[in-house]
Image 1 (cartoon, rainbow, N blue to C red):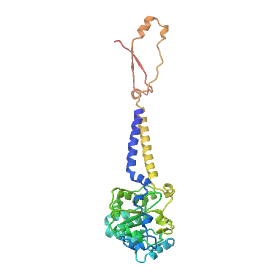
Image 2: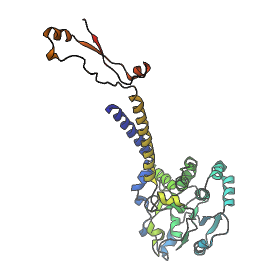
Image 3: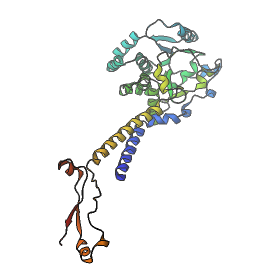
Image 4: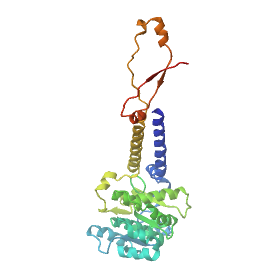
Length: 357
């Protein structure tokens, strides 16, 4: 029994180790603060600073946004218009469902089946933003993000994304030069992450959403990209917390369902709860299998019952009879399986035999 339990625990340990290794990138996001690539406030000119004109502007002056059609909901019109009004010299492109599909079919036909096959419209809205940044460059902004100041200072970086709480990066505001290696890798691995994870929120987040982008970013940074391939991180303060921040946030994210509250009670990452669920299910299955194996094995164990003694007390015997009974005996074991085949006997008996040697 002890040996079997040890083997069972060892197998569990190996499987859990493999699971942890397979999600090591997810777990590493829990301790990632993105400080090494942060865009520090000291290097950002104030909204009216003369230093803005002295900074290089390598990202194209294009603002991309997405919606299913050209009729923007009233709740987002103000946010959309703020970005248009602050950037009259920028090209503005609204990517509708029809325009997005035509672009994928024309420029990236190898992805069209995956694009059409997504279960949720938000997955197409997520994926198209990676393709247009990789192809055209520019700045992508969600419709529920308004512009608080001009984006010119951010055009100096080859690529940037924003930090999200409590960990990882988000895909609601991003900028890039055309053909940046990070976004090229992002569109390259999209098909590998096209999986269903039962709950819609997990499926979206880990197939095309912020969690997917965070994992790709973390693995990309491990390769040590050059300065031209570096991805800078816009921190929360610079994003929307102050009057000098770049963006304002408006009500939105209507695609979030009730299942989102189950996994992200406060908007935190899915990494830990999902990994623990997987490990728990695997551990339970192994424990159940181990129990069944032990139960089946018990059917063929040797069982013994004590046979009542039919030998008189040695104290009441004569010396001659005592010496005659002291001859060694043989105890023959009969297994439970043999007893069943012999006619329904349920206990193993001891068979007494005389040794003449």
